[in-house]
Image 1: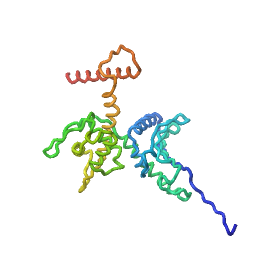
Image 2: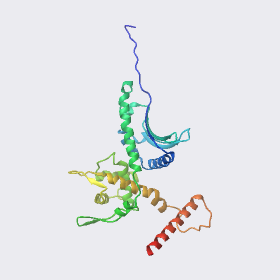
Image 3: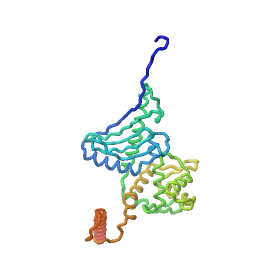
Image 4: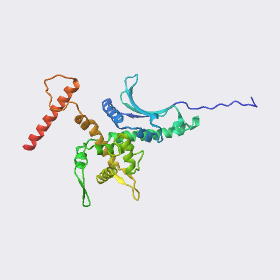
Length: 301
């Protein structure tokens, strides 16, 4: 024993770290959590997950999803290699953000027990970035003033720059790309964005030319959505631009897209039956017509 002393060490195999937000009423938590999961499924991309963990991973090592656990609560989870960050309701008025790590080297940490305080600092920073991403998405409201303000042309010197419209496909693609990648490629060149749009949306080299991307970025600069870094050819989204990109992306995905591409176009006979979805579309169409007639009569009066 003296010649070959026995020693042992403790190592961490799986570790979890969480943060709880306590609500006075569970009704507020229900609506907030539902909206947060909806936005997360739509807007959190693989680039966002890399930014939250402040690390890089291949596309196949990243995933996200909404699942249901035994207690009947839903859980939104984003996987990063063998680690994950998730949010779920706990009890009736707890909103919990939780980091689970099954392999500490994924977070560039060592497994020895003495490195547990370092993991706590790392986990705190990960949950801080996750909370900031959630707050940024939840703080975007589809305010009509956003759309009215940016739909009008703006003057830059003696030049009139066109406005931004929700139905412009090029504008939508550019804003969505910058929104998903503004932290991962916080500083970018116009041709980098063009290449990513061509790759992600399969538009082809001729479908999005160099002149078009330069014109689109110039338009976003005129509206205060992106800014050019001094003495460089690089650009980045402004803090105001993030909100505008969120507002336009949500408006198109939630409202304009479903209406424009709906199979239930035209004035359908409301006396007919059909599926529940068809009946809901007819009811919505009738309500919109009623609002239109009411506003027209009010303006005439």
